[in-house]
Length: 333
Ligand code: SF4
Image (cartoon, rainbow, N blue to C red; front, side, top):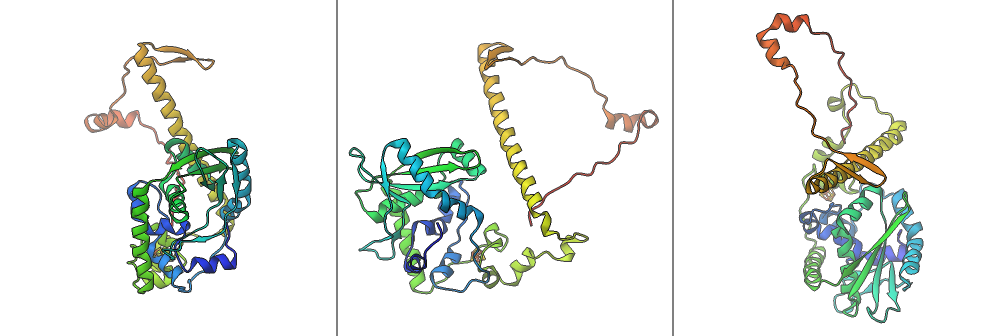
């Protein structure tokens, strides 16, 4: 959620749950999760280095903020557990450790007090969660909450809403002391760097995280700018038309939907093939359909390459012009 000025100022004095992805970026990458954060950018933020570009609150951030109470209500209704807001907390023994959880879960006599994080997912993240469970970057946030709030917190739930499809689910996160110890150590090491003004190394300039980084000019200098700028040498006759941005975004979204659907279709067909192989049958009746999977007879095709080489005259006689295609390609810049 967008920060109040007080909250934003407090965040400068320590590390909160949303900062962890930057500090644990290598751990997150090793786990196969998408990496967003950069320790150097976090260092700039914590030490008050003025960004080169202004931070803009995106539509996705606003949507998450507006839907957070709704997600908390859905969770509460579905589980019968009560939730309430909790103030920003700072660890007494390690004052650089802080946390602002979305909600505290109360009233569960068996499980005791818990943590609720409310997430608003886009289509891609939603399908990843459905398929593979919670991303590591979500899990570490809940673990951090348990760590800072104290040992009485042994569990948390991540409630996730996919607004476009209006689908909802929640995932349990159990306290993992080993992970917490590792996180606490990395956070303490990072905080020492902040206090000693010891800037973390920069990422390679071509790293996608640098493309939209608020400090990219100061941090990477000319090399990055050269790579990130739209220059004539690289783009030749291209014209720039910001008005088409929405159309390109829509096309990319549709491509994502088709890719996802193709994967799901292939997986469903593979499952059917496995079942039919196991049943030793080419036909199955299921889901209101007759599904057939027959082996086709072998066919014959002309080996064009060989014909062209060994019988060029015949090849020429039976060839006709095929009009060249004009594919549209999309390359991220
Ligand atoms: S430009 Fe890249 S390396 Fe530098 S702070 Fe930003 S993300 Fe990190």
